[in-house]
Length: 316
Image 1 (cartoon, rainbow, N blue to C red):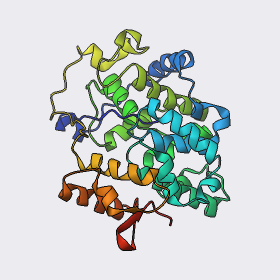
Image 2 (cartoon, helix red, strand yellow):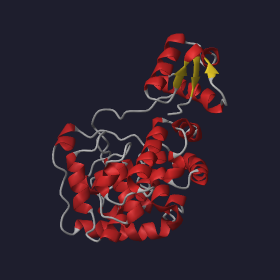
Image 3 (cartoon, rainbow, N blue to C red):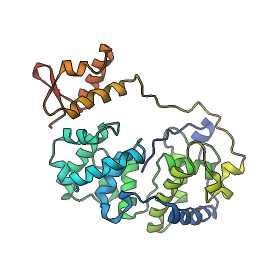
């Protein structure tokens, strides 16, 4: 259940050196209050309900990458109503996954989820595997998603490091405002050190620490008054020192190739038959950028070119 918050780098000395190891009492001091807070404040999200199953958890994890919950919810519900099992999605053309993805953004995720559904159907009899290594071997599944599905769907003990969790750990355990841009070996060591020994408790801890980062220990305007571990947070106890590394990377959209790609895909999603080049040309005035965006969509397998200058969503 990853968020859209952009991670920010920490000073090189912090990112490149081993993370501060928690004391022997530190893990339990964090676990108990965070788990108690989660019991009271966890959101009722459809992928957290027992009926969601492993497939529902997997779909949510793909959709929540860099996309807020409020945008995911309606698409998630429609997706599961149409494709309640991996084999249902696998039976459709990949272009239908792209069409149903709508405006969630980063539509290559739709193709990857379709590819995972095909592999699950062919290799695992249509059931999302519970084995972490088998999850990791599915197309489109990386370290985070494999750990998240194994933890949230099957109650297993894995460190689940999304942006929210990494920010909570950076502040509470290492005393810095933001984690590095990319997950480091030091962060993985810290996450393993903080993981409860019991499998069920570890799975709840993964969800609870993620929820804490999403709702309280946010990237901006953190609410320490509501935080269950504010009294032991290393960053707060140090006076909440400001980030002093390179500037945080912001995300832009207007005028970018990503915006153009979105406009081109919107035309194809709404079309019931192949679309002529002229119809695509009408959505963006700048021809060089438009051509570059369309070429990128073709290269990514999101758009299929046909003879006579026609385009459609992919059928294979």
